[in-house]
Length: 394
Image (cartoon, rainbow, N blue to C red; front, top):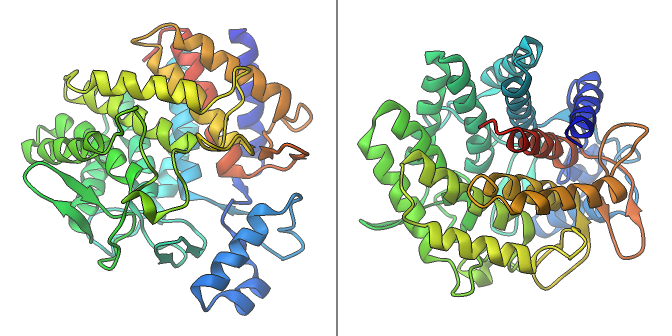
């Protein structure tokens, strides 16, 4: 079985490399010249244009002249997968490819808000804010930061750790601190002082980034901010072990969704490892149990939300594999669940011909097209993570 995973991952990475990691993106509707001209001026119409492209049962991006592009977050994820791959097989080609991708990210970095940051390469309207193309945000920046941190762990190059330090500066100093008390710190998604509600995983990701970097450079203030961010996340866990997508919960129609739940759990686990504490292990276990019982079907299919089965989304599959593979380091039984999710995914959302992964499966049809970051970058990380856990590499 391990050999099969290796072959799947190698075929996936080869296919994505052949396309230079360029592809379509979930929220790239406003890259269409016509849609942007017609709908790009107002919040409601921007949302409508993005949703039109995103929800179409077939991929209509070519019809609307939406170009294939490199997604900085996706490039960070691919780099992370290559670094895991290198740790497994010590093949210098994998490390070289990761370094090449990280070098590209260095060239794309913004320093507009101090420190180092990245955003999406397309204009994006969320319910709570509008982000022009390349406008930095904390989510993209954190995911890229984790790859630079892993590269530092492997190579010990000081320049990678300096980038992590710069990332933390952006996270801390750019607007907006929604909550900033002695006990809690909550950061906004984008550096926009007008944002008053929180997306929960932002502060979880920041807590992990602060903890990793603060521990590495022995910065007590940075570790303290990690503590406060994580305390904010822990205090928002429901009594049954879940997290709402936003705080306050009524800020979004999303309740307890699949992949954001998994991301928060991973951040708790990584935070505890970085600061050498098991303070929140009971919260972590309770969240894992909720995630298992409420966000996957018995056959390994990912649910969309706790109260909505469809669509089965590839990001949910990938996140489940990542989260349960990681959890298996402490609780070995979760490795079987990660493998079950991958088995379902291979049977339902995989193209044997292209070696890439499809977007979604609804109750009536499957969206048999791929999105480079959303589908393939996440599955590359998932496969690499599962392989490392099965072979005992950390």
